[in-house]
Image 1 (cartoon, one colour):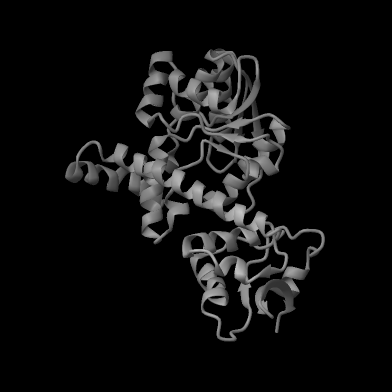
Image 2 (cartoon, rainbow, N blue to C red):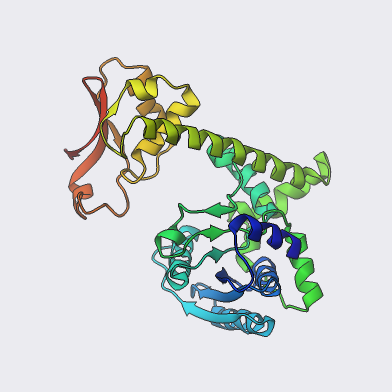
Length: 333
């Protein structure tokens, strides 16, 4: 665990004494991360977010904080109200809280190599492209926790496995809390972890987890390179997000770059784009025959120019006019 964290600190240019915030649930991954951070000399503040979604969650949160204090970290528990059901609203509330508390400091979370392997399998079932199949980024600047106030989101344990973190906690005498959600059969990731991967190990060999993780890491490198190239094309064309985009700019690029270019162009203007959205947008460039505008999602939190209610009365579209792609809000009919 300490070697994994040391390599990350070099990449992130963090040194002993630097202040970081660690999200700690009480599970083995996050407790091991907090322990390694303290051992590395970081000024660690752990934050345990109590979502209040399970009976006794307050006791679990306080027990996690007490263990972090025993390691030498500053620990706090924050209770939040989750707006909606399911994992996504809870995750949104958690990252918002972590970012606000960080207030300019990095936030470290304890995703491991196992998360990359499971994520790759889940993305394959959706017919995803390179960007979704790629592993998690070690350092993320475009993330909700950063928007909420953190300097960056760091994942120091992507080279470690869940067995490593569990073993670290055992060596340190830390009591690990096992989230009951992690074994629920109605949660797909849980079934991948406890049902699918054991069968894959039996059929394909015990090293299948490591192979999946390695593929995810290689795909991350490829995806990041393509994203950077697409951003370079837009920058060279001096086209701001959502601004008028001459058709010849994306038309002159191969498909993988063209689709990423269109996604970059709409970043900060439109909401999340699906493969269907991108296919229809690409047809405005590569298969133009006079078709009408393509509707795209409105941002969940529209910017000030749009206004908070315009997304309800209007739809956001991309249309082609006189060789230029442009965004527009058209009244809903």
